[in-house]
Length: 167
Image (cartoon, rainbow, N blue to C red; front, side, top):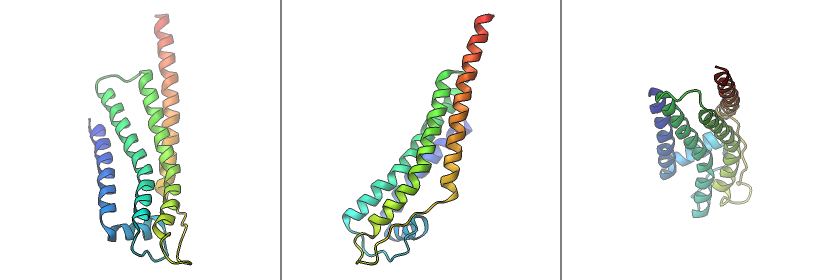
């Protein structure tokens, strides 16, 4: 139950963080400089630049929230004693794919955000910034591990069913 609560908390914090970041222009500018990697000055954002950057940024955040909610559901099944089941293997594999997608989407989203946040700047001050961080690689590694564990769990369920048929 603790792990399930932690998953719900992580999903809620990601959603809260996205709302908090995009409502405060100072926090958004700090995010653009630090996380996105924009070194060009960021002037007043246009409406289109703001909404494009927000929409693009919600993709990896949404993938993370979806992964955490699916993982919470999996822990809920575990707490009810539903452990060695094919549905759990499929859920675990989906969580892995969601985390892998988040790891791949993050640098693409940040690159597109850097363009959106600076495309109203004067000529010579527009920027495409590509940033890679350990969190992205961690998401890719965790996603790959969970996909592998899901496939192993699926095979374990198959073997358990086969062994049960002999008894």
